[in-house]
Structures are given as structure tokens and as C-alpha cells.
Length: 569
Image 1 (tube, helix red, strand yellow):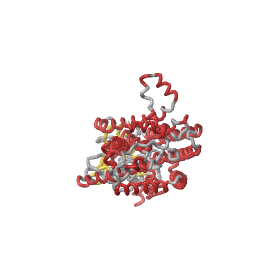
Image 2: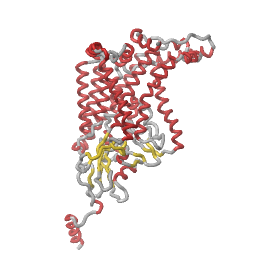
Image 3: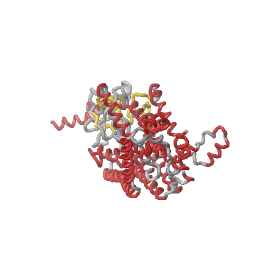
Image 4: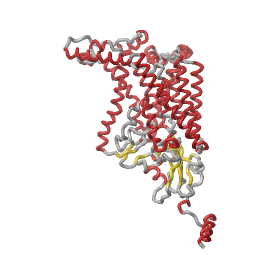
């Protein structure tokens, strides 16, 4: 009797007269992004996606969700969504991250975006925030962001450190790219959990922390997330990135103003440190040139990143996987042409982007003889071509290249822009394809043209670019749906990616050890410390006032003579 009843129920279920209440609204379409679990009658959403309604009674739409905004399942490629009647899909995906809204783009009331969170620099975490704690957090923010930046650039200026001499060019590029556009995590879509399981986040931090130092993100991963004000949204936090990126320029300008202020110099002359005869020996002109070059090299990628985040749109897809709505990726509650967003965020981002595009153009066109001839024939364009003083600044970037290959300094900056343009493509496979083409083109140019004066640097850059191309190829390979079902092949690819990821870091360690041994870096530090102690001793002894410090040239008087004139006048 019981078997007969079970048989009848099965027949009724198959014919549609009896249906599981949970699966009655199982979604149709959406590919493998949103599906039903036939056994648990729950929905399954692919990691890295958001799903929900933007209008009451409308279709459920799906779209890419920024890593950290929506729920993420570290032990599987899918998120299990219980079909509870008291909670919508969007609410379920956002609640675990203290977020609400379309694409989980807003923090819940009483919370605000953390200033120092995010796998690639954007504010992904929402943390509790109130008026009393936010006042202290502003002070803490200045101490952990601007004070270290000030210290880094003062060290660059004091020790006259050059980051654009060649040996670090490709490594800095690799560190900046691997922590942003070429991140093997692929915004949470890469199945790293197949190898690392619950330790996926720890693995990401193991390379994000050291490599992000070269994006001027010094303490972003070391400190617990904290907010600044409860009314700030994610876009406001991104706008603060612009101030952080341009802060080194403020340092250089402040030093220039100080040097032009005679009253300041008289006061400085009476102080015991860095003044008097020791200050006169300081090559401030060369140091400021190298500090400006370091600013461009270290801040450029961060500024590109911020502009990309503020300008990145994303499409919301219907069951047929057609785009029916365009929103901002990191601020999903704003439509693509919302007037408030355009005025407060989009317009400043475009202005910075124009400046970023102009920098590689200036580095690229300066050494071109045909450009010089063209400008000389057109009177109104003569002021466009760099003067001798500006040429010295450009030479800080181009000095390691051959005379007929100096435009490669512009190509290296342009590469960062090109990678971010590829990063804005809506489909991950398109991004990986364009990035692969870019890497192959640059490898070809480096191999054929050999732009560096030192041939070993040509081999070094080809090796690091090849490394980036291999990582991109493996990311492209693991992005394929058929490969993701083959766990053995997938695990091998991820392990190889991980090894390739840390090879440039090994090069940096070897290079620093070699530099300290052969160049006597420790002896230079000791000598500088001795000079400081002598200066302090003389200042305490009350010796007679020495003449005002004068700006002295670097070891190459010809190279910096024009720059010296600029400071003096």
C-alpha cells in the first residue's frame, strides 16, 4: 500500500499536479549564473554576481558584484540562496556584508565604507560608524596614510633615491599590475579555493601586502578596517584616493616654496639640523627631480585605478542575458547618467584621466625628431614643445634608455592605461584576451628594439613581461567553464600561477642584497648619519651664523644646470 502511494505521488509530481513549494519559482534562463538546486530546492548563484529586483514585480536581474560587496562562498563556486519568503535575493546577498541596495552599493544605516579595505584598492568593507569615533578616525587616517607617505618621499629626497634607473622599472610595473588589473583572483571569480580552501584570503594577502606598497597603499591590509564618517559613500572614499595620490606633489611644492622663502631660510639657518654648511652640500635640485619621477612612477597606477573605479559601468542582465540597465559598478544605486554622480565624481575623474593621458604623450613625443621639426615650422605650437627645464624632468624618466629609444618611458606609462582600459571591458574573457595581446606586443617590442643602454635590463624586462603574459594565460585558461570542472588540471594551473606570482619578489630581494653589497648603501646611510650628528653638535655649540644655504648642482652640472636656474629665479 505504501509503495503504491509513493508511486502515485511520483506520477503526480512528474505531471505537474504536485509541485515542491520552494521550487515553484525556479528561474529560467541566466545560463549558469543563476540556477536551481534540484535536491534542496534552493537557488544557486555563481560567485562574483548579484541578483535581485530593481522594480517591484519585474524580472530578477543579475550582474557582476564587486568583490567584498556581496556574499562569497570560499569553499565552492556557487552561493546557496534559501528561498525564504521574508527576504529577497538581493537582501540575502547584501546582509552578510552590512550592505543594501542594487549591487549592494550602499552601506546599511549606522555603517560606512572602510577607508583601508579592498582587495584592489576600492572600499569593499562596511563597518559600524558613529560621530564620536569618526573624529578620532580622521586623526588616525592622517597618521597611517599621510605621515608614512611624507616619510617615504622625504627619504627619497634626502638620499636622492632614483627609482627610474632601469633595474626596478619592470618590477614596479609588475607589482602595480598584479595587485590591480592582473590580480589572479579575478574579482572573486577565480576558483582559488580549489587549492587554498579557507586560506584563500590569507594567500591573497601574502602577495597583495608587499606588492601594494608600490601602489602607495602602505598600511591598507595591515590595519583593521575603519571608517571616517557615516555619511561618506564608496565614491567619496575613492575621491580621497586622488588626494593620497597627489600628496607627494604637495610635498615637493612645499619644499620649493620653502627654498624660495628667504625669511624661512634665515630661520632654518639658526636651526641645528640640515642647515649651515651641511645643507649647502645637499643636492636638492637633483633630489627633487628624482622625487617627482618617483611620484609619477608610484602614483600613476593608483590614480589610473581610482579613475577606472569611478568611471566603471556595469550592465544588469535579464533572464536572456541581455543588458537592460546600466549602473556604476562600485555605486550600484546610481544610474549611468545620474546628474549628482556626474558632477561630483565623474567629471573630476575625467579631468584626472586627461592628465594621466597627457603624461605618456609628453614622454613619448619629446625625443621624436619629426615632432621637433613639425613644431618648429608651426609658430603657434612652439610653446608646446618642452623647454630645456622641462626636458630635464623628462630626462629623469628617459635617462636609462638609448637616445633613439627614449620614447619607451612613455610606452611604460601608456601600458598602465591600456591595461585599465582592458580592465573596464564587461566580460572577463575579453579583458584577459586584450591583456594577453598587449603583453605579447610589448614583449615583441622589447625583444626587437632593445631600448635599454644596459642589455641585461632588456633581458630582465622581457622575462618579467613574459611572466605577466604566462599568469594572464593561466588566468584565461582557468576562466573556462569546462576547465573548472577538471579539478586536477585546475589545481595545477593555480599552483603554477602562484609560483610565477612570487618570482619577481625573489628578484627584488636578490637585487637589494646585491645593491647593498656592491654600491655600499649601508656606508652611505652611516655617512649621512655622521653628518647629521655633526650638524646637531655644531648647532648646540653656538657657532657663528653661516651664510644662507645655496642650491648646489648634482654630479652632472650640465644635466641639472637649467633646473638649478629655475630654482634660483
